[in-house]
Image (cartoon, rainbow, N blue to C red; front, side, top):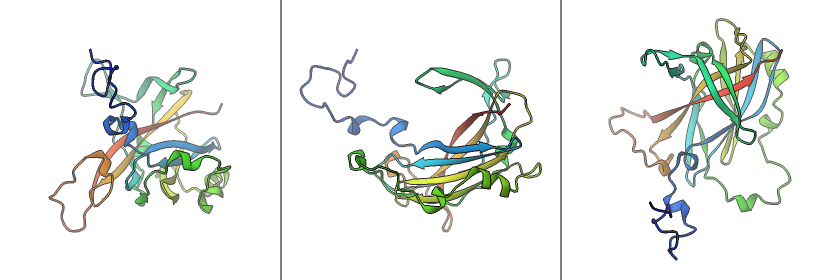
Length: 232
């Protein structure tokens, strides 16, 4: 077996320290999404999502509804189950949970505005900074105020919008009705849509379609799932 993932021999004197030339794993090219803040009033839940660009090129993206309905069942591969099992939510403590997927709320999400994220900055340049420089709209974002002003209802169970962006980062707001299920953990699928072509996401090596009409943009979609624990 090849011991050196770069060339095959760990004793080689050349090729070391150049992982960036070889590493094409998804973690190096897919935008990173994490929950910066969230809160619930018992009937509605508000999330502030931070999306960052890990690549050395421009990335244009937006959030939209996801068609993900869960994993296939053992009995019938054409059927899916909204019950997600053994989800790793904390790699440090190895905490795994079961969650119920709220697909109805996800389908009602309208696509947000598209934002353009600048290339990622060198991590060494960030050393010494005492606080993160964020847009004013993001620093003033309060979940309580968002929940109070939100218009989500049984007719429109969820909403998403772009709150602000700066350099290689953007922040999105997601508000949804708390699911009626009694499960301890809930989940909602989202779609992160990334534009390919016209200088966007060139590090992915995905080629845009050539058959688009007019000013149409080509997007590729990736599903992600947000998990949270319900308040008792």
